[in-house]
Length: 341
Image 1 (cartoon, rainbow, N blue to C red):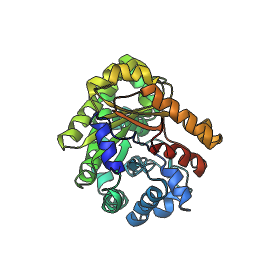
Image 2 (cartoon, helix red, strand yellow):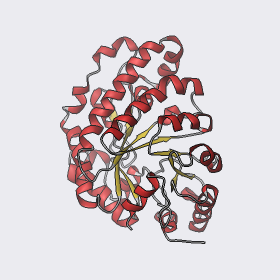
Image 3 (cartoon, helix red, strand yellow):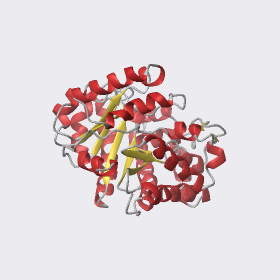
Image 4 (cartoon, rainbow, N blue to C red):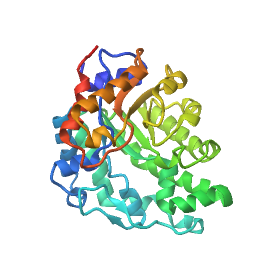
């Protein structure tokens, strides 16, 4: 069985012949490894695709998040300045709007009609053309709450949860519709089997469970339903400690939930096991960033032991990782594709 088939089994809550292993995210790492910059490749779909294709050829991901670290560009095309002249992930330097009074100025067409956005969408298809039969190719985008924070600013969104909740919900719904307008055409490719929604601002380290249930969960649930309605897998990634909202994740019902090392895998299995596949949760810092390959392997084995038998699990990092991660440490994690006792 290849990586695509093994990951599909995990997403379907079955137990494959070995644990699927991947490096989630890593767009900046791949761009850096290719000797490119984001500004240098963003207008060329073939070059974007080649970064991910060649990265897969070197690493062997069972699951590949295509378009990783390209997800700030939709915010840029809405009108936010961006810094992308290096292999670091493109950074937004301002916000699109200064207040919720400017909601009417936001237009999805500004994003979709931009030629670079069209090229980025096409790049996902080029990746799937080349390797979509070998790995589970899954495009990634911001989730609605995090996209709203990119458009308005994190501090303003936090204040709006208290002072202007109804208008904030309008912005989150706009973000939901924008995300879907990007994901839907990408999912048309038969070898793109799903989509991931990254929601770092929904972390339990940043918002309360009550805020999660009001401003995050309904919109994630809407997009998960839309993705599944296409016959595709829906994945969600949330950073930080999400222990208090794992029951909510079960209700949202993604195909897979990617969690950080702050969440105990045994606890996650008690709540999500048999309901939602779980991906995680080797720390992207620590040994993976600056330790030895043996230390990476030891941490990864502890994750597999913590999850235990029964399938429905993908071994990976708990979050995205920097471009400075040593190649040998990345491959140490990927070495867990081999069976071990």
